[in-house]
Length: 144
Image (cartoon, rainbow, N blue to C red; front, side, top):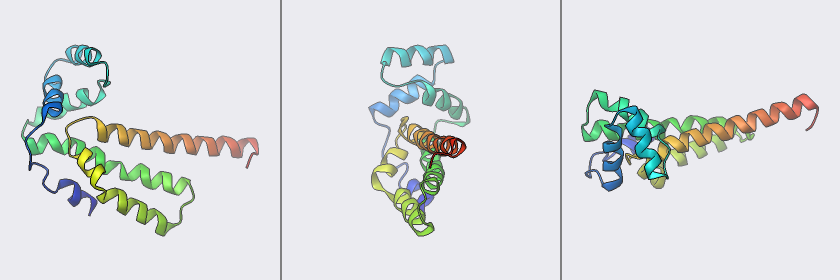
């Protein structure tokens, strides 16, 4: 259901200015991408690097927007891991994943050719790993 929701109307609108900036930046060489990202001074270059290689398979609107959809749907995995790590019951985890999978704001940013879904996914993995390492370190030290 989440994949269907993320793919629904994926190419209904043309690229906006921010998305065009992502596309144009990703068309440069890796040093040019780094320079453009540094000049922008807001966004790190990771998404542009990934988009640079993703574009090698084509620059169709549907194909380009599929990249953030991949990260947006992949983010459901660390949500599940984090929910489990926090001790949520199976029904609560399922509800959380279901809501995250069809949440309009998450879908909007997962369909936008910007770095939002990549950073959301990486942030969730980071939270899960931090929680897991904190729990492991606490149990190793005998702290409950």
